[in-house]
Length: 226
Image 1: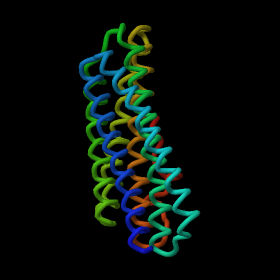
Image 2: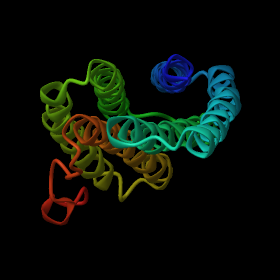
Image 3: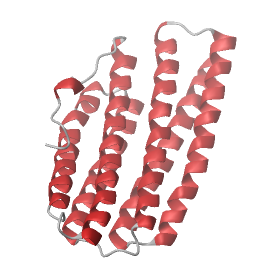
Image 4: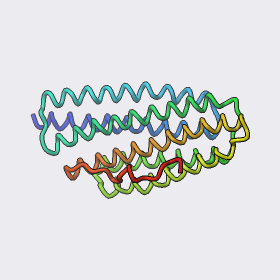
């Protein structure tokens, strides 16, 4: 019975990691779409979301079955709960990639501003790094690596504010401002991807320590509009 249960837990974790890898492909896809303004690539990213959603719902269903059949306790229960929460964060990151892809398509007829594009690409690359670190930390049960996500997230938050400040300079150019406002939303999506990666890191710490605590107090974080 125990061997079968362990195999189920291993399958759950493998499914979570596979969904995370698809999200990484989505993030890299929207980075390339932003860099090249490639509408067809945007469509590919949007299509990825169906697979991410399917994998999340499959994971959720498997977790329900494990909870019903095995009634896990202690560390096993923490793993199941951490996978459930982390899977939801992965699914949300997929949604955020879709929003970025759709906004890039909507803006494709407008002139871009290279400074903002470079800032967004930098944010995207940092987010991809954060997601990769969060998945690795979870797999290795590495709390120190998970806590390191906070420092990476600070860089993403800073880039988010820089994009906002840059777009403020377009206030006297209607077309540039229309494009820029959409890019502010893109930046916000990247910022949320970073937050979700941190959330997975927090689940890693919970899995290892048995105690859940946020790495930072969000109520004291600087506003992205400052």
